[in-house]
Image 1 (cartoon, rainbow, N blue to C red):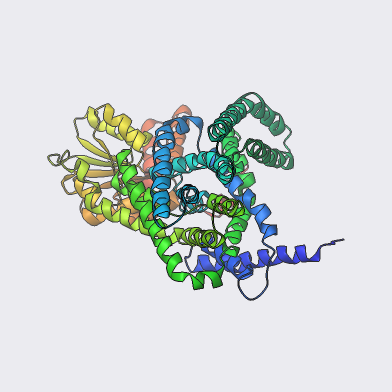
Image 2: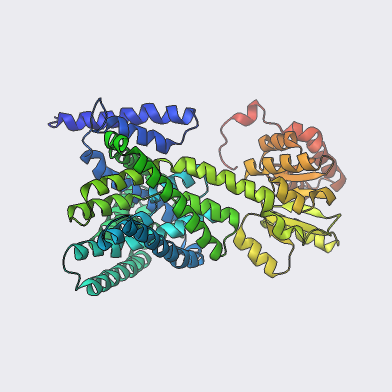
Length: 573
């Protein structure tokens, strides 16, 4: 029997709001983040209608950020994290220090005392991990270069929360023990991180092997939940955020064979709990207060977004990031973050900060978070415009005298094989790829490969698409491959375009996009295997070749899936 009926009603209201608003917003092509924020506003205490006790989603909402950081950790194996250390401890440190100093000085000049200005600067230096990662995940950009740099900065911000929270009680009382308290906090944090990594290497991975051998999905899911919550609790006990602990827990499993199953198991928890987090942000928006202070809040929000963007863009450029990616990172991390709510509320409770100032700044942070999806769209548009106009200038000069070459879009295993064969026959080529590490490594070997998006007109012109003798598209992502074919065909109507397809369905789409020849990988592999089998069975070579050529006629029409093929196979692929 349910004794707390109000609790059940609150849960139902939260679920109904999500069920109604999220599909509606997505149908209107509005990010789901804004749907959850709107649901929180509707159910919050500052608007007419039903009111949900914010304590209920508040308790669960923190776990949304925890599970999100766990998922991000799963996508960042230690090898990749080591490659990011320059951005974590270089750009991340510069961003926090420079932003906190700039905002702190501005707050002091506007009348806050030194302690309050220091806390405000530190609180507003943080960005919203949950909002930024939600935007990156929805667009599939967490592994893009600017996505990885954004994650690196967010990781350092999570680390920087520790000394800031340590500062709060000291600024409110005796500051004599400041250095000692910070030193203890740092030592505890480092010890916790080292302990977690050792625990993962010698305990967690063997335990997962044992659990997986039991073939019990519910026990495997329970193990995932236990790991996230236990490591999060451990980091919370030493003064760091649970989210940072969850990130470390994800790192422990990123290089294991269990990574993909773990990610699938936590996906439902992550999505629902993260939605609750954004609902709590919406509930914190005091609309009557914001209406009374509208001019101040809007002015401060604009100053925060513009100021952090300009500062971070400059720091990204100093760190060696290209202008287009610097624009994306700077704008995407320009908002305030969820840790600001914690810091500001504690500062008000300790009377370091005036209550009305705290409410104003909380409104600014919440509003800046709500605007993040729109700012992300702006960042994407500005970066694309820059790349179209200037992004290709870096290699335009190097390729200006190249003609009669083959343009290769995508320099993975297939692209490298094509390039190697072309080189053996003395045919020049120019390759484009979006993996910066791969480009850097290959250019060190003297290969004509450049960082660039083959779907952009400026990049194609810089690569000499009009002077090329052919184009080979080996991009592994189907949608991107189709866009590349369309872009090349648009700018070089008579150029032969050869591309790869995973199956006959993509074969048709690529032909429609303008490809001259399409090689369906799975079909061609099957034909080659069938040919070898026939030759092994003693069938003459010319008969085998004729049979295979017959199957290739009419765009592999003889191999199109028939009724018999649609039955569920007993095995194979």
